[in-house]
Image (cartoon, rainbow, N blue to C red; front, side, top):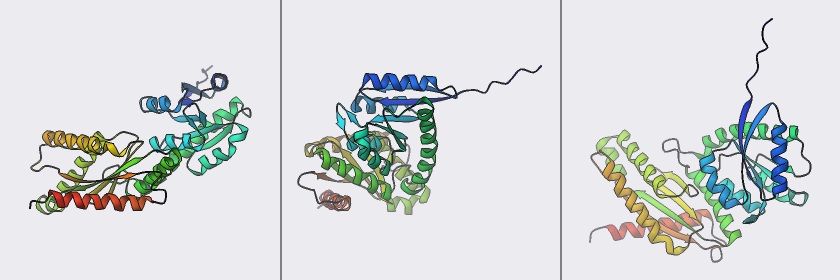
Length: 303
């Protein structure tokens, strides 16, 4: 008699951000009872520590409570979404928080679950479906929001997430810096060395920006010669720090490169003050940064 073939059990990594120890225990027990899937669960008790750990953990899904010691309501989801836009999220909510949960769905969460209305099968199915739906969503979103050459956000993607960051800053009362970057002499490089060499310059510039800015910052390739970056939760006094980091990384990457030319950049900085700039749009902020960039380029020209 032939032996029955045992099907391997699929393993999913779930990251749980929840501060209520009893709810954490209930969720762990429910997931441990599901036999068709094996769940590996890691947990953090507040949003800040959870977001710090997420990069290293790389889970398949985030279970997120909206009311945490350091973040409450919809802002909790917005912060997580802005930093990890491709990670599927299921919202954990009490009965009184369903309004926030529904708004989170509108802004990109895959599902929400009301605490107290759970069973192991329902929870496992919600997680599995959320991961599959998110995979399709990410593929579609990448077609619309990601720059094919650099893998950074394109102009549409940058404006979309930049607008979200501005709304978040308005709710929290924090500021953010927008940096506009122009690749100097890119047209001349393309004319002299060809289109391929020009593309390499753009790729090197993108690497410099990735090396300079935080994972939570939004970096976009917003035009043939232009990049834009939003760095949230900083003050106006950080201009010099950001500029110094950018110039240092640019020097380092140029020193390591073997090409016949250096990548040089011009910068324009502007600050979004959530109190003074309540009526300012992301388009307005981009225009202000562009004006600052033009001023910087004029100052660089030899007299």
